[in-house]
Length: 397
Image (tube, rainbow, N blue to C red; front, side):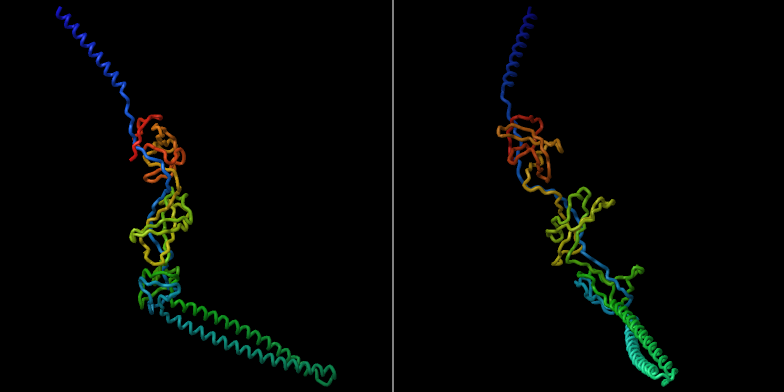
């Protein structure tokens, strides 16, 4: 009897506990849900650019090893390292005795040829005068013999005629001698010009405006002729043009199609803590197979000569530019490519997922080409679990 009473007691307790638990669950289910708080921002308008920074070394616009055309000894060196020179400025003077002798000989040959021409012209004048007298004598004798036959022997007529022909031949020979003397004089003058040209090479001048960056010889040094067949010839000096410098940029293959001649660039010279404006002037239009880069050149004016060849410079190339673009923070983009989405919060606090087209990107912002208007509220993070149409509370940081 006691056991049955105990069993009934526990049954009643169990029923009461179940009833209480059901009531608690009903109260919990009926409690209102809290609105989630999300980090938010705004779509804005801003200038967007895609840049790439390339490092290159400043190089002279032109540079050349100044060689000697003729072998000789340096009599006097007029420049040294660091000297600024102008095109045509005398750098050094060579001592070449044999050239001096050849030049004097050529001058003497010209004088001789000129004297021979004068003598030939005088001989021609004498021949012309003799031919005139001989021809006049022959003409007179011939006229007399025709008017009074038998008065003048035919032999005298023949002799006069022969003298006239001989004088005429002498004139022709004299004229040829004059032409020959003129040719000899021209040849002598050409030889003199040649020797003068060779002798001019004893004065070595700078081929361009620039600075002497290296001196290879001093007074008294023997300099070999710098011909293409003599690769052991030593230069006199090295001259580099430094009023304009070049930057040879290795542009990666991925950016080759985005650069154009005349494009403005920004050049940073870390050693001088300076920023300069430059212009892309030319490029090779060929990708090197070994580096997969294309060489592009930027010219920099160096009027004050404060830029030194060999310095490193960083060049910022603008690959794309979109002014006044609609942009959102990078954290607002969900996904990538064609599947990119942005979660927008409307005025009622409801979430709307929109498909967007992304454009240029910076470290902080992404350009939105379509799908977003400036000023709209967008969710920056914590988007997992959000549903389209769900109510949220934006929190602006």
